[in-house]
Image 1 (tube, helix red, strand yellow):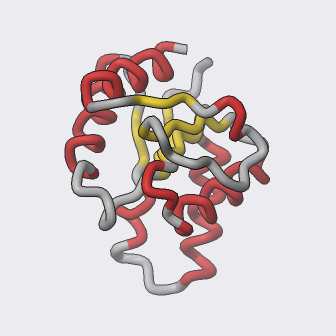
Image 2 (tube, rainbow, N blue to C red):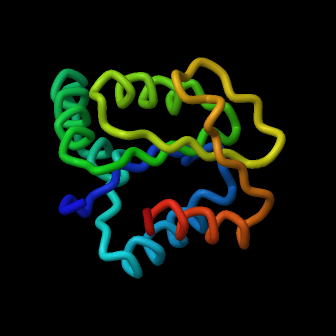
Length: 129
């Protein structure tokens, strides 16, 4: 694929491992010549919710993949996932082992990880595809 961008959906404030996960994603992305977009980076400075949604949809459509970590079952992540699924952009769902996966068109294809080592291996495999 010629597009080297991915859109990352993941819990941030509720996940004590969020910074470590982000660092892993960024390192893997660099190894695979991929640019990872984290919507919270842009949304911190966005004041108009209509613009935020529009810009998120545009970024998702520009991406070759949406990577959605549904660990911790955060409603905001499910909301973003629903938006992403409506765009037709390919979505890969991941979650920590034992996480219940709720409303998603592709929940049966969820890929699970057990720890940060398996998380990094999983991200590497996903970005290599």
